[in-house]
Image 1 (cartoon, rainbow, N blue to C red):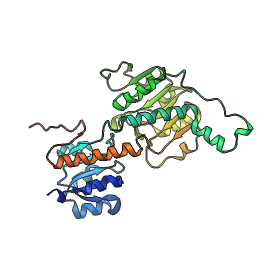
Image 2 (cartoon, rainbow, N blue to C red):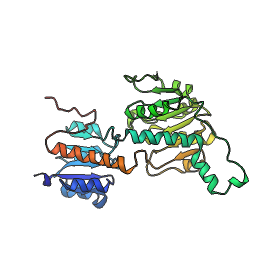
Image 3 (cartoon, helix red, strand yellow):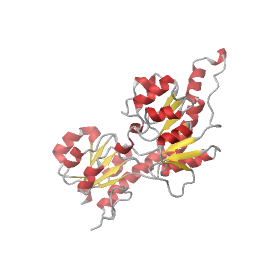
Image 4 (cartoon, rainbow, N blue to C red):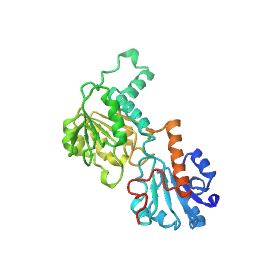
Amino acid sequence: MRDQIHVLSIGEMMPAVDAALAQDFVVHQASAKGIPEIVAEFGDRIRGIATRGRQKTDAALIASLPKLEIISNFGVGYDSIDVPAAMARGIIVTNTPDVLNEEVADFTVGLLLSTIRELPQADRFLRDGKWPRGAYPLTQTLRDRTIGFVGMGRIGQAIAKRIAAFGVPIVYHSRKPQAGVAYKYYSNLKAMAADVDTLIAIVPGGASTRHMINADILAALGPRGILINVARGSVVDQDALAEALRKGVIHGAGLDVFADEPNVPQSLLALSNVVMVPHVGSGTHHTRAVMGNLVVDNLRSWFAGKGPVTAVHETPWPKIG
C-alpha cells in the first residue's frame, strides 16, 4: 500500500512539502533525526528521496538504500546528487524545471541593476546619515554596456528577454549554439569576456563548469567589469573573484550563490563593491510552493506507476528495453 512507501526527506525540505508527502508516504526527516540514524533503522525500506540539495545525495548514501527507486530534487540544479551512481542503479532523478524561470529572471534583472547602480550601498549611505554632508557618488550605468551570458538555457533566455527590453547588446557563451537564439554566440568564454563588460553566469553546477570563471576570465572582463552569478557558487573561483574585486581588476559583482553555502568568506564580506544575497533567486512564496508541489508530484506519479513528471536529461524515460 502507498502509505507504507518510505521516503527520506533531506536538506531542510520546506515544511509544506513534508506535510504533502506525509499524506501519501511514511516520511523520514533528516533534519529531525539525522541521515545515519534513519538509514540504520529504515534503510532497507526507503524507496524515495526528496532533497532540497543542501546535503549531498552521494554514492555512499545511494548505496546504503538498496530499495531506492527515485530521487526528487527541489530546484533546477541537481549537482548535489551523484547522478552517475543513481544511473548505475537505474534510479530515476527528477528536478523542478521551468516553474522558477520567470522568478529567477525577474530577480536577476534586479540584482544586475542593484549592482551597477549600487542600490544597497546608497541605502546604507542614507541610513548612516551621510547625505546631509554630500551627495552619493555617481555610479556605473547599464546604458553603455554589453551583456555576456555564460549559459543560455531556459532561464538564461528568460533573463535575456528582459534585458533586451533595455536596448543593450546581448551575446552568449555555451557548449554549443542554442537553436532559435539570435544573439551572437561565442565558443570561447575568454574571447567573449574581453568583448563585453558584464557577465551573467547562469549555467548548471558540477565538475564540467567548476571555476569556469577564473582569474583569467575576470582579467579579460576588465576594470569596468560587472559579474552577476545566479548559477552555482562552484562556477566562479571565489578566491580569484575576491582578489579581483579587491584590486580593481573588475568593478563589481552581484552574487546570489557561494562556494560553501551558507558560509560566505570574510574576503567578500569586507568588500564594498559586491552586492550579496543568501541564495534567494527563486525565493518567493509563490514560486517555492510551485516547486515543492512538483517535488511531491514526481514522487506520487512514480509510485502510482505513471513514471516521473520531470526527469532530468540523464534519466532515459520511458525506459528502453
